[in-house]
Amino acid sequence: MNKKNSDGLAADDLAKSEMVRLLSIVGRERSVEAFEAIFRYYAPRIRSFMVMKTKDRQAAEELMQETMTAVWNKAGQFDPARGNVSAWIYTIARNVRIDAYRRKRPEFDFNDPAFVADDVAPADQEFQQLQEAQLLRGAMETLPEEQLDVLRRAFFDDVSHSTIARDLGVPLGTVKSRIRLAFEKLRSSLEGRL
Amino acid sequence: MSVKHHISDAFLIDYASGTLSEGWSLAVATHLALCPKCRKRLAAMEGAAGALLDKSAESGGEDVAWARFKARTIDVKVEEIKPVAASPKVPPVLPEPLRSYLGGDLGDLKWRALGRGAYQILIDTKDTETQVRLLRIPAGKPVPEHTHEGRELTLVLAGSFRDGDDLFARGDIEEADGDLLHTPTATEGEDCICLAVTEAPLKFSSWIVRLMQPILKI
Ligand SMILES: [Zn+2]
Image (cartoon, rainbow over the protein chains, first blue to last red):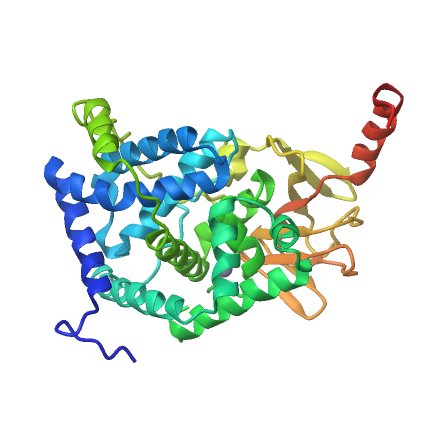
């Protein structure tokens, strides 16, 4: 089980809960100061995410600015119970990139009356999500570089598994098994939660 | 009653990364609307992507970038969030995003007969890789015209079907590929309504290639 308590949080985890706090302030008060801290942390990261696909710094800069604009506009919709600012910002950057390439990615709608909600109480969920985000980051640290590399290509390069295999000069089955091994590891770190 | 048959990691990671094409994504997203468990799996994948994002900084010119951002965005008004439409009293059978693709719930649909009591509606996407349709299979009858090449996703929305020993009910998704011989059959008592996504017929693309050959000289 998770041994860390509130006194023993890793520096990385502290930085993450700080981001949750800052983003909530932006959502509530439109604080430019709080947003600047978020911007300075995420802008270089989103830029490098965008460079992976576009291979063009100018275009990547534009898509980064667009992503941060969406983060600023949607800050009020960020749900602290979902706990993970980096994951949320990743999904926004991903959607900006999908739009830029004129593709479509249908999504479910939380407000749809036919939507089947989770039966966990929101308060418990908030605690769980924070814990899970920590466990996940810990597990990511233990993945071998070759698995991390394949995950990075899958999430950032926006290419098919067969393209990843070709780029790496390995069989398609190897790419698939690295992805599978990585998620087995991440899943076992969240044992009983997924 | 909870969902028993889930989407595989392979489809889910491609949906998480945004690589999955529109037709497959429609089936995955509609399954996610009905399945809290797979939404947690998706959140874990997006969490992993977020952790990778934390680790990949391309530094350079943050002062300039921030100044540009402030000038362009901060003083501009926030986009209005569109109000949520009031929920109807009886929840629809078809969840989003599928309902919007069909332009309504079950009662509003115009079915086309396939013969032997089965009906379908072809669903239009911009995706040339897949063919997407809603199927209505009469109770106790097999799924018609069931020859396909390549991958297939079938998501049950009403009623149920059996495939071998497995029962697929509302929310369950079956993944099959061309190698697998299977004969899904609707369960007695209720028609089965399911969303079926298959790879676009290969014949069609090879016919196009044949037509183009003399022009392209390939
Ligand atoms: Zn599921």
